[in-house]
Image (tube, rainbow, N blue to C red):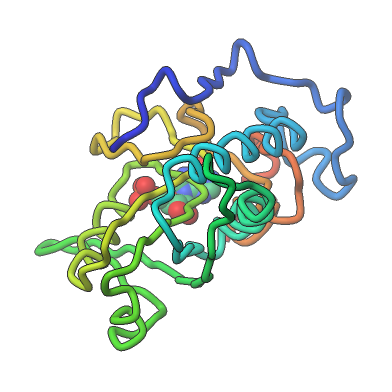
Length: 218
Ligand code: IMP
């Protein structure tokens, strides 16, 4: 079931733009981001809460699917948090891990996704409880297409968590089961989110500056 908006944190540029002077930024990115939107410590605190919600609702073993590359940091921190928790009955959740690189494509006729794992590997999902871990939902197109494809392999259940959801008029309305933060319609980097492969080595989630966009443009 999609998470209710009152359950996730609404980040706005008015409330949440921290100055770069307030936290430590790697010197090689000092001029490339304009502000810190979500400091690393806040991300980690929120990840702990999302892990709690996931464990509370888990019904048996989970196959946790990391959507590469952007989802890897959230995936790693979430798994670490889930491993430390038990259900209300005091039971730990058995986890198996899967890594999927997803590319979305669009053309005149159709929209769809290609996945880096084969149909044979996807057959392993049959009858299992899947938890998809994504970094950000923007238009929602990638996730809707990915879910359509995964459903053909008849898993027992599919839940989705995304650390971020963008408040954009281009949204198709898709909302994951577990959301960390709703963010403004800006391009963000850090905590494994990239701009042309840069900024994955930045811990805070930041808004890229015009200078950064120019410097790392391809
Ligand atoms: P969607 O299909 O429009 O929802 O796009 C989802 C994908 O676009 C994400 O998995 C990211 O890889 C990428 N993306 C969208 N917005 C951002 C952003 O602000 N920073 C980094 N990547 C983004």
